[in-house]
Image (cartoon, rainbow, N blue to C red; front, side, top):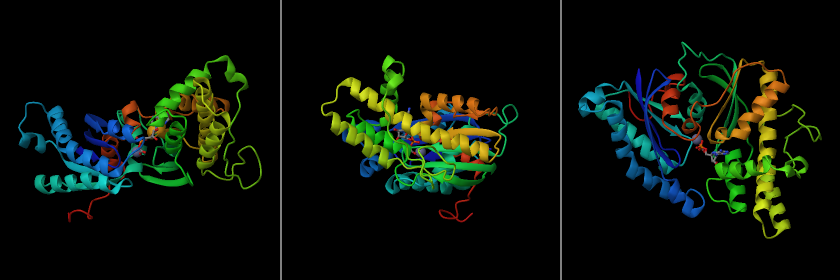
Length: 349
Ligand code: KG4
Ligand code: ZN
């Protein structure tokens, strides 16, 4: 079963062909990131126009990568279904992908599936994992952390899941982006804060650094997580960073490095504590992370460390390639197999 998948929910125009829900035949991503760096964040109108320009070239590139030298009709005959991200995301960006997918399905006479973007991030861990060789065991817990969303998901079976916690305000990636802006480090914030924090992590000052407070969302007053809530909140932390920056005045490089480190540790302390807490509470067989923030090396190593401390000897999986952490269409092709939703919204089938 070969699925041609389209993802345009934010600033990546992405098209991929995925076989049997895990094998990536080709994966093309045209990003309009350079345009958003000029404004320090995404302007929806700019992102949508970039999708309009990139979608047809991306589609052609994918078909030619999948079957070089074949005619267009031969290439189309190799596709069984079309899948597209239908929500959540920037509406004008989503429309470019959904309209394209709708017309392709109509013209090529293929079934059309609509895919939830967050299901896509969760399914990114299916990619390049042959189920015959690397089967995924259930139940599992997946922490999907991006710029637009932040969910802790308990999955009992493929496609059968419950959201046990989510951010009540900013998503963690959004906090990275806003803090990078406060520190004057550019957009997107995640990779640059990771690089700054790394400079501090290995310095002698790391031992006695100051800390930002953690928002545990406890029912009881406690400065440690009391296990009552799996929800998250990061907007208070962002305000704490702003206060600290204003207090210090003109920032030297070393101030930025120290603040980036303290911020990153505060975010990951909460995310990792709750992820491990959920794994223990629900007795899961695997721990997964997904979304743009899952590209962070400190995040990954803290999870491994805390799993060891908790005596959790189960697989910990993150997307096999960094490009599957951030937005891409291969994950949409994987989710279309795991969470298939026929698109009666677009076409009667
Ligand atoms: O999943 P994604 O590409 O788009 C959304 O669905 O939102 O995630 C983008 C987010 C951005 O907020 C970006 O700053 C963050 O992921 N991010 C990172 C890293 N790489 C990207 N955050 C922390 N560390 C990283 N290495
Ligand atoms: Zn995303």
